[in-house]
Image (cartoon, rainbow, N blue to C red; front, side, top):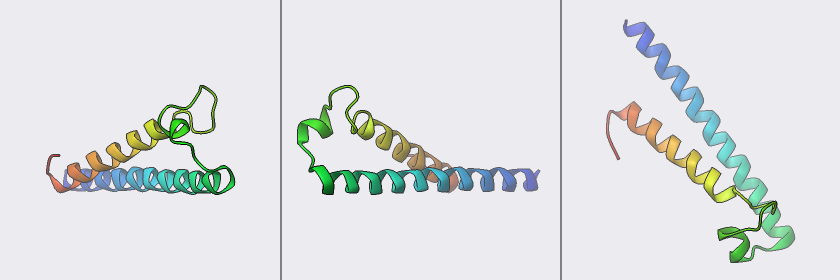
Length: 79
């Protein structure tokens, strides 16, 4: 039973690492976009449908919250 719990934790660490990697890639793409185009606050906070930043904030937030939840589960704590 302990081995199974340990294996689950490893899988979660792998999932968490994958989410963090995705967040870093999103940050790199955002920075590249910002350097090329600048970022109008309207496009960041309420972009038009189909804009390159459409859904960016929400997706990044969702990934970040999943990582936070995973970290709390590993630590046995709550947010």
